Image (cartoon, rainbow, N blue to C red; front, top):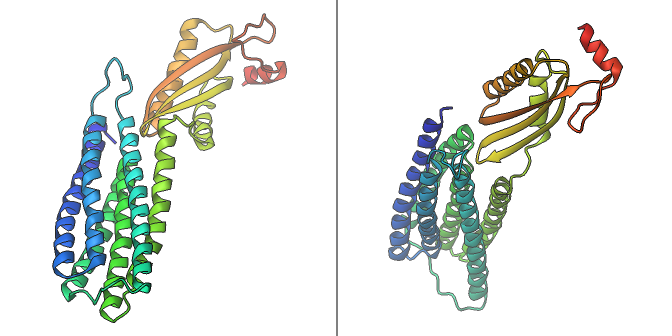
Length: 318
């Protein structure tokens, strides 16, 4: 996918989510107050916090689209991981706040301090409307996030999914509250908060792994090996190191070539390795190829590849 198109799709997903959260925050907060629904009001406050961090994420997304410069030769894509960290932190904070408020409400009800007598019918319809909107947003945002491999957009998609659970909890609470069971509302909120907390922890773990430059998994090494090994002139693969820059990859590959080849021929093989990996691995931004000599019958240096003589002879026959 072209970088500009990827960035445009990612920003669109952020802005659509921000606009939806702004509308829902205003709607749920006002109806929660007018309709005497603590559950809907709490969900409205949750959407208000979504608007706050949505603005922060939109700023980071804009910065991530800046082209490479002298200080950032591979671009600013890691801003996406920083944005995901912001989302994860807000989600965890929201989960803790919801859980604490839910436990406090349960205690007040059992202690006889609560005076909740049931919400208006319009509050129930607004909660159901929120569920429908957030389900659509979840499906669409996660689709965009997986297409672009944007950690920030994926984090927003999971947050939309959390809002589905939160709105469902509000719906259940309002429904049972109108039937005379007010304790169901905060209990459902406490259960949902634990789900939200787990999602926030997962988002933080994945986004911080990107920022800490965690080495990509064995599948990538296997893919590189499968692409490089058939290239004529490559006798062996010495080392494979890959680094993340946001969703993009930069690979350092060391190959072993016949030590009696000219520098020009060795460079030609290295260039072919680079072009092969760039053409066949999605989101590969740069490949650095080092080639070392294989000389079993000549002197060995620190950078020489050491292959058994029979292995080299077998390859020479081919």
